[in-house]
Image 1 (spheres, helix red, strand yellow):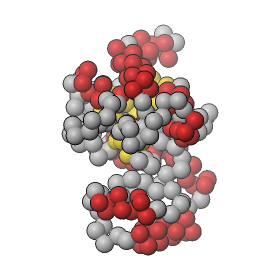
Image 2 (cartoon, helix red, strand yellow; image 1 turned 180 degrees about the vertical axis):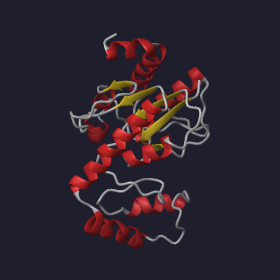
Image 3 (cartoon, helix red, strand yellow; image 1 turned 135 degrees about the vertical axis):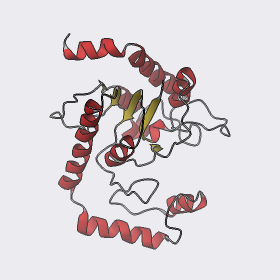
Length: 229
């Protein structure tokens, strides 16, 4: 089964060199033998909804898409490995990007990066516009999965407007809230990224994995129930 994940840092997984706990992505990949060497499109810190759409449309032969939808704050920057807010980059962020060679522009200094963010905020950013981009990308993701008949599990959150009604797949509104990724210091499952690749403890990752397995194994049943069949 060719299961593919899309989304923010909650979808990060541990690598072979990592001695921390298995994340739910590791658990699912092991169970369904759906290992994915190209992890450039998920597990993205500060991931935007537009980035999810961008990479979803590039994937071929997907048996199932598991999408952890972004929050409206982040602006898609294709040239960066993660997206931006209207805030400035910290020195630690820039040092990490440089150290891991994950910024495409080799000559990008902290000052230049912050100039980009400042200009975006001054000339291109508006809260309503950003919300329109977020909801527009989310609707396109839904419609794309419907049109391409891609089985999909949507994990959403409380910042998705009530008027958005998904036409594709299964929609889960509880898992992300339980893990509380927007205020992760409040959740008992958060143990920090230094202790877990996705910041979630063993119990939390098992909870997410079990829920995904339930959806995968009973996908048709959930779809029938959603349609009222």
